[in-house]
Length: 124
Length: 144
Image (tube, helix red, strand yellow):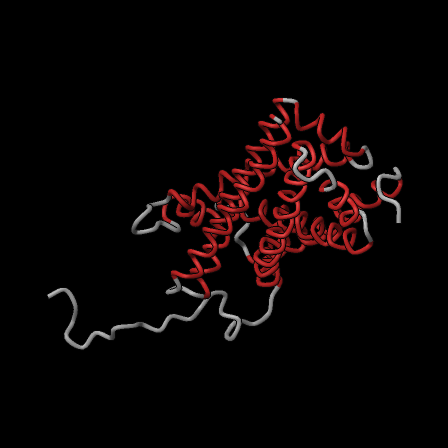
């Protein structure tokens, strides 16, 4: 009985923000599903590259498909991370704009560093 | 007038996950672990970004030693300890995330099912980590 009641309610009624509707809640779920696939690919690739050295790693990243998937993995990871950090900030420091700002800047720098490194490896 | 005359300016709200008032149970532990492992995985994202930066700097000639420096950390005993911790956090976060996705579909909310899902997620996360490292060691990808 509990299950059927909640199944009717869950996706329709829960976690709707006054400002964003269900968009953020849905984004958390879609990025989770995407990351199951993308981190699985990344883990499999890391397994293949282990012990192969610098040349193999560079050759791997210079393939457009691998570079594209790596960039996508990082964009979605950082997006998911940002939402996760914000959920913690909201729960424990609900009035702190500073922590929210620090979390945003950290995620932005992380993304710039990863994509910058990838760009150098792919292009230069 | 939008507020009653004596409305308090700031309302006290207990902060999630209410550790002071909840009795310990497995869904509580796995919920806390899901947050903790998510935070731990930020370190993993930083390390993967560092790997990309190291390859990029080496390839561009800006810092030819960058990849060697990264590898000397990554393959050190401390580095392996960090990778092990990250893989444990990753697999527990993965199974925890799948558990949340199941709950988000409105399934598994009966007390017994919720507890079982939590236990299975935790055990599976640990088993996947042990299996992953067993394969790495058995194939010689990681040497202690």
